[in-house]
Image (cartoon, rainbow over all chains, first blue to last red; front, side, top):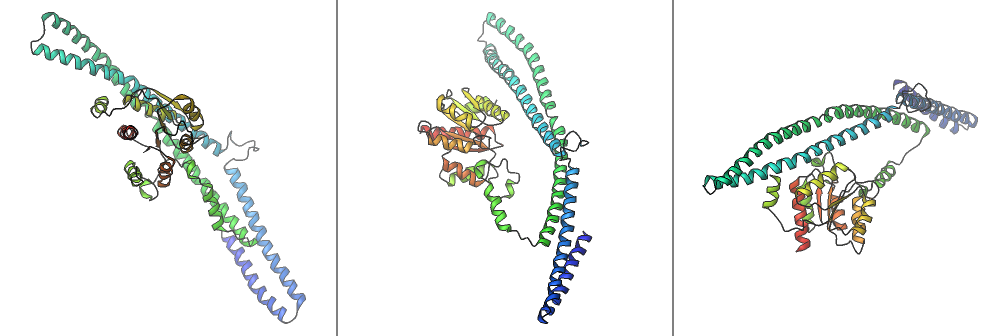
Length: 262
Length: 140
C-alpha cells in the first residue's frame, strides 16, 4: 500500500512540476523542450500504469493459486475450494432433506397409533359409563373386560413404539450440528473470497486511475438492477422485520391484501 | 387432538376435491400434503414446477391449486398467469404458499389473480383459514 502511495505521489509531483515547465516553455516559444516534457509526462504515467497492472496480475495469480481455481495445476487438491464449498452445501441440502423425511416418516407412523388408541379409549369410556350406570348385563361386561385387557396390552405396546419414534425424531435433528459446522466453514470461505476480490477491485481502480478510465457508476448500477426480475423470486427474506418493502409475517400479508380489496 | 380442532370449526368443504400441490422441494410438498390430509383432503397430486404442473392441470380436472413461487423451470407466478389465461382453467382457485414476501410480489400475485397468499414459514391454522376463506368466497 505504501509503495502504491509513493508511486502515485511520484506521478503527481512529476505532473505538477512538468506542467508548470510545459506552460513556461510554450510561453517562451521553446517548442522542442515542450515536446520533451510531454514525453516525460507520458513515461511517468506509463511507468505507474505498468507497475499497477503488474501488481494486479500478481494478485490475480495469487487469488487463483489460493483458491485453487486453476484446473491445470496438477498438485492442486482434488477440487478447488469453491467446488469443495459447493459440494459441502449440497451435503447440507441432502442432510436436511434426509432429516425432514425421516421426521415425517416417524410422524406418519405415529399418527395412526395415537388415533387408534384415542378412538378405542373413547369407545371403552362410553361402555364403561354404561357399566357404571348399571346399564350393562353380566355377559356384556365380560366382553368389556376382555376389550379392556386387550386395550391395556395394546397401550403398553403402542406407547412403547411411540416413545421410540419420539426418540428417533429427536435423533434426526443431529443434522443441525453437522450442517451448522459445514455452513460456518463455507461462510468463512465466502468472507475470504470477498476480501480478496475487494483487494483486486482496489488494485484495478488504481490501474483505472493511471489509465484515466472513468466508469459510469450510475449506469452500472442501473444495469445490475435491470437483471433483478421480481417474477423470478428471491427466496426467504432474512431481515424482513427491518425492511419496509417486505411483509414480515402473515398478518402483514393479510393487511396488504385486504388493502387491495381481498 | 388436531383432528378434533379441525372438526369443531368445520366449514362445508368438498373433501373429495382434487388438489394439485406444486413445490420444487419434496419435503414441502409432503408437509402440505400431510396438512391437507389432516384437514380431510386426501385427493391430492404433486408436481415439482410449473412446467410439469400445467399439463396436469389441463388434463386432470383439478378443483384447487396450491403452488410455491420460486421454482426452476416455470415459477408459480408464471403458472398462475398461465392458468388465468387458459379458458378452461381461469376460474380454478389458486393458493400461493411461498417464502416470497416482498410487498411488490404480493401485489403482483394479487394482480395476476391469486385467491390466497400464505408466507412460509406457516402454521396449519393459517393454511386452514386461507383454504376456508377461498372456498367461502368461491361458493358464496
